[in-house]
Length: 371
Ligand code: FES
Ligand SMILES: [Fe+2]
Image 1: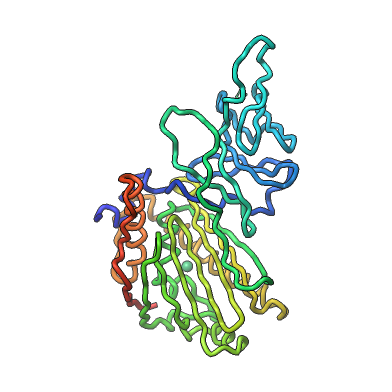
Image 2: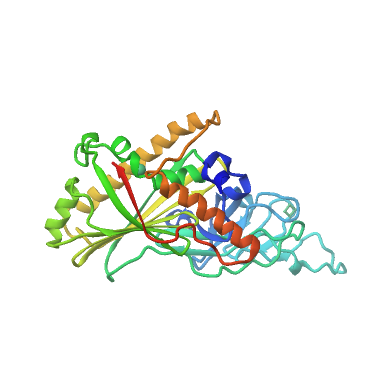
């Protein structure tokens, strides 16, 4: 699959994967009886909550003549298009009323649907399931059911703290994702006196293994060259700290850190908004340092700093990418990026043929790099 090894060679229809859940908006920004604009995979969406607080997602386009529905009237149950007043049930998109019909006109109003998407609230976010596009010209029908629930941040105790942060990246989804899994940028992008300097760069060896739809960096004791980990070991009074990092299609990175009875877990997603824009959302849950003053704030500060450093880097990279440069992926530091492209290709191939997906990794692999 040499063509798929390079990000700029991606055909646009292989760029964004349908048939998955995506984070659309932070839940605390979506209020009852209100409408909000959003976009996922170039699809304009209108998102809201009904009177009971249940979220919904519709295509932001009236099936009559394409009017954006976010400009319509919403009574907490039905949404009325501002152009000719057609009304739609917000949960399944079914048309409820066409005001221009006379009493003897028998048009079957309930056979008309506005595009609608399965929608769930999970860990601070409204998730939307983007199903595979139907056959061309089929028009809108009842929403497809999602095959499973939206992903969750893994939690290991009943009590925990939860926080999120997000950043817009002016690059395609592929650059967003390979930036997320890239181990070699750390010493250059994420420098800070309290974290590490570029002089702390040293050789690393990590074990990776295939998992369904992705790969795992196996549990290990994180590098001892960072002060926060030393602090954590002291605080948790734990002999060992284990970290597991998974990447799973289409866009999820989960990281789990466990030290004795304490844990920290995060689910980071890179969401394609348009072909040229993506957004990083990090949701973290943890039970450590919950009652130590300032520490949760400190954790958030550190995370926000990292995400901001990544965002700024990608903003600069986007400048360079405008000129469509030739790009390369090297071994071993860019091997995870290669796996990502191969996983995507294998996923699309299995969808095309209906055969089981052939995982690009045959078994465990050890990668080495300096970072
Ligand atoms: S465009 Fe929406 S009702 Fe006509
Ligand atoms: Fe980074």
